[in-house]
Amino acid sequence: QVQLVESGGGSVQSGESLRLSCVASGYFLRSAAAAWFRQPPGKEREGVAIIGGLGGSTSYADSVRGRFTISQDDAKNTLYLQMNTLKPEDTAVYYCAAGAWYLSRRTDDYNYWGQGTQVTVSS
Image 1: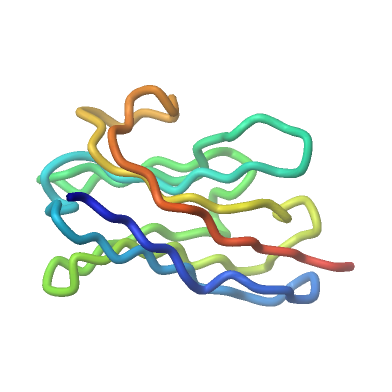
Image 2: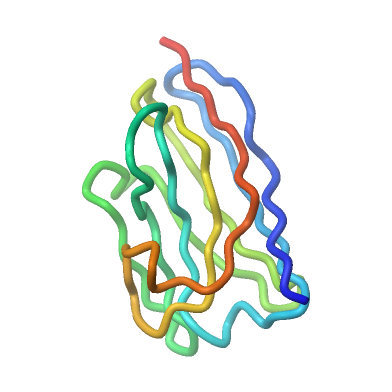
């Protein structure tokens, strides 16, 4: 049984940082692409950061490029999202996802999902 469990969300002020973690069990994250998505209130889920499987290539949404960094720790089978210089528009539920065969921002391309963690940024 595959499980992805996110942690690290919280409430911060604009300009502060957070690091999200996603621990995987029953599945090796490096097997395929993994990603962080977010869903702001009343909006659709969007892919913000993706990391490839074997090669480790990364891709970012324009709105977070230069502020967010996605990474993996193979020994811990954990996906991370370092979020710096947070803005109120970054407020959303953040989800980790895994199992896509390419660097996709489409939700349909991912086989496994976590339950989400709330990030709230106040001005």
